[in-house]
Amino acid sequence: MPAFGADELLEKDQIEAVADYVLSLSTQTAVAGAVGVELYAENCASCHGGAGEGGREFGAPSLADQIWLYGGEKADIVAQITKPRHGVMPAWTGRLDDTTIKMLAVYVHALGGGE
Ligand code: HEC
Image (cartoon, rainbow, N blue to C red; front, top):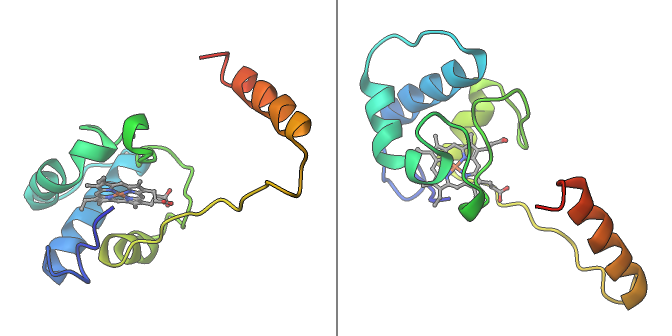
C-alpha cells in the first residue's frame, strides 16, 4: 500500500482522522466527523473495501475485524498509513522438496474449502 505519510499524500491530521475511522470499523463504534469517512472512501476503499472488509485481489487485509498483522492500537494504524510495512514470506525451495511443497499446497487449498 502507498506510504501516505512518508510520500506526503496525506497530512498528519488527515492520517489521524482516517486512523480513527479504521478503529471505528473494527470496534464498531461511531466516529465523530465525516473527514475520516471521506478520506477512507477516497484513499483506502479501493483496496480495503467500502466497509473495510478487505480485498482479496490486492491482498489487502480486512480492517473491520479484530485480526491485525501489525497491531490494532491507533499508533500501529497511524504507523502503517504513514510508512507501511509489507509482509514477505520466506522462500521454501531447497528447504522442502517438491513433493512436500505439492502436498502442502493441496492441504492449504483444502483449508479454504477448495475455493
Ligand atoms: C493499493 C492497495 C492499498 C491501499 C490504497 C491501501 N492499502 Fe492498506 N494495506 C494494503 C495491503 C496489501 C496491506 C497488507 C500489507 C502487507 O503486510 O503486505 C495493507 C495493510 C494495512 C493495514 C494493516 C492491517 C493489519 O492487519 O495490521 C492498515 C491499518 C491499512 N492497510 C490501512 C489503510 C488505510 C487507512 C488506507 C488509506 C489511507 C490504506 N490502507 C490504503 C493495501 C492497500
